[in-house]
Length: 438
Image (cartoon, rainbow, N blue to C red; front, side, top):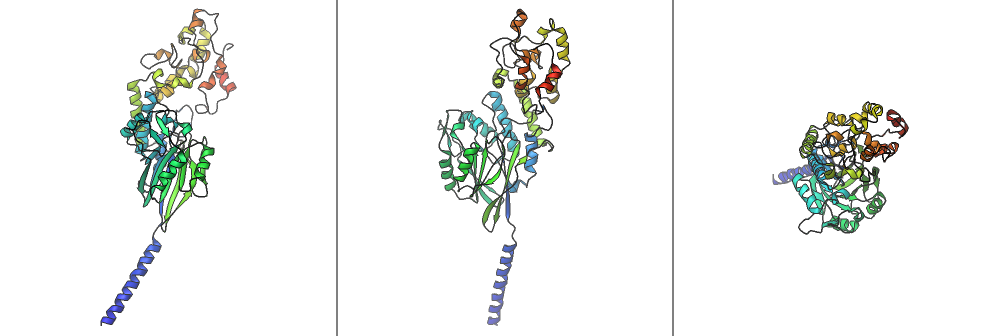
C-alpha cells in the first residue's frame, strides 16, 4: 500500500511539473507601448489659420490613448514644451502641462525653452501641474531646487528606468548648471536595474546619433530637437528615434518581454493628424486656458512676442488705419473689402482673440509705439491695417511728403510663414490686395 502511494505521489509530482511547464510555455509575452512627444514649443493647439494643421493636445490625447491602454503604455516627452519665459509663456506652459498630465504623462525631459525659465520657476510649474521632470545632467545653481535624475516606472509587468539629458549648448539661462550628458547618462543607467532603460536626449541630430552609439547601456534613446522626425534606427545596442516639430508627431516603440528577455521593436513615427477626434478633456483644458488669458489680458509688451516680428519701426508711432482714410479714401475702401480688414473677426469666431500668439498677426503695430497693446485698451488697432504693410505713419500723416517707412510687398512673409500659410505664393496673394505703387 505504501509503495502504491509513493508511486501515485511520484506520478502526481511529474504531472504537476508538466502542467507547470505547459503553463509556462503558454504564457503570453508582455508588450509595453512607449510613446514620446517633443518640442511642443507652446503649440497647445494649431492656430487654425489654414486647414489640415497637425498637432494640438486635443488630437494628441486621442492618438496616445488609442494605443493600448493605461496599463500597457508609457507616455514621455523629450523636452521643449515651453515657448519662453514671459508671464504669458509661463501661463501657456502650465496649460500644456495640465493637458499632458491628463494624457497620463510619466516623465518629461528639460529642453531649451524650459531652461529659459529659472529652476525655481520651472519647479513651481512642475509642482502645480504634477508633471515630473527628469534630468541627469542639469542642476540648479540654487541648491534649494533639485531635479530628479531619473524615474522608475512599473508598467505592464516591466520595470522601466527613464532619465533625461540636454546638450549644454542648448541652455539659455546661467541659473542652470550642466555636466557632460553622456557621462551623466552612464552614471544613472548603471546605478539601477531595470528591464528597459530609456534616455530622453535633447541633443541635435548629428550629436544624437553619436550619443546613442556611445551608450550601449540604453535600450532606447528618444531625441529632439532634430528639426525633422527621425524614424527609429538601430545603433547596434539600442534604438534611437525622435518626434519633433511643435508636438505634431509621436514616436512609438514597443518593449516586449519574452522568457525574461526584453527586446525593442520599432514602429513608424505617428503624425497627430487633423482628422483625429478632439478629446473632450483637452478641449475643456484649452477653454480654461483661454479664460485665463481673457481675464488676464496680457499686453503685447508682457507677452514678449513682438520680438518675433523683426520689422524695423525705428521708434516711429503707429496712427491707426482710420488716419489714412481722409487722404486715401478709395484705397481705404478697397482695403475694407479684403480679409485683412476682418482679421480680428476670424479670431473672435474661434474665441482665440484673447491669445497673444494670435493677436500678433491679427492686429496693427503689435507691441509698438501707438500700436496694439491689449484687448481692453487698443481695440482700434485690431485687424491687419494699412500700417501693417506700410509701416508706422504718424510722421507721414503730419508731413505727407515723408513717405511711410516700409515697402509693403516685403512685409507679407512676417506673418504668412510656412506654418500659417503653407500655400503662400507672394504674387498670387499680392494680387488680392494690390493698390497704389507701394
